[in-house]
Image (cartoon, rainbow, N blue to C red; front, side):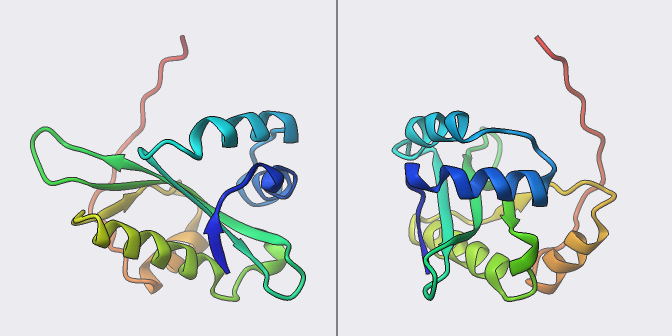
Length: 143
């Protein structure tokens, strides 16, 4: 089942972030971030919880993408499924939950960025109806 994120999901998300996204984090930090972001309407954060064992196996985080010069949409920041639960439709269900929410709020598109080396993810996004419409470089300045 898809549901809103809760602080008790932090431990499961720590494992998913590490194994699926390659991001090192910890349960305490994730608990704090869940508390900060889960009530903020700028974000859509949901988890997939297995109905049979009640374990969180994936999550999606998106933020409102409000443009001064164009229509508003949502930007997927993270979509991750535990490696042992992949290829079972969980990622697709998480994206559909965001799509339904966004459409219900009157938003017209969902966008996401995906690292050039993640070719399996590219194939997944194309399979669920997303199109690559731009190639770009990302620039960052740490402050």
